[in-house]
Amino acid sequence: MCDEHSLAELAPENESLVKKAVDSLSSAIPALREIDRTLNAAALKARARDVDASGLSLYEIRSLQETARFTLGSLLLTQARIFPRGNAERAASVLDAEEIFRRQASGVPGETVTWNARVAMAECERLKADPKSALAIIAGIEKDDPPADVRDRLKAVHAQTLFDTGRPDEALSLLLAYQKQRMPLPPELQFLK
Image (cartoon, rainbow, N blue to C red; front, side, top):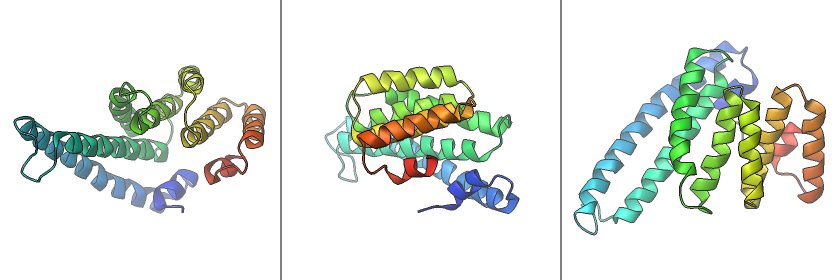
């Protein structure tokens, strides 16, 4: 399914679509920041006892908070992708997302949010136009043998990084080799190919 944010990223010359996407993200991002603050307050209250007033345990609150934070970081990355390279708002969005993902990437090894945050860190480096750092993060994740869904996203970021650095033939070779390992390719990678 292709949403307006994805379309805006693919068609940056469509100013009305880009404006619509930026407007929707500009309302969603503060809402998620507020949710994070609310969950943080609930976690502080829950520390004093086993559950907070909502009946949620501290573990459940922290889990919701990590999900909200990851979603916030993902929206910030989406926003960064929509703005043109060199745009100050793009840079600010990437830095905000990177701060969120850096904390999550150092979480419990093997946890879904940790894997996803590590891949998002590579994407942050790609969007900051630092392919060397992006490729180093990708290599580090690959050696840790990530699950298939993480490998799929990682290959997409890897191919995009190669493409961004003017190496489309290497990006295509990477995807063709991966296709042999993983048939059929997931839709995200089929699009890049």
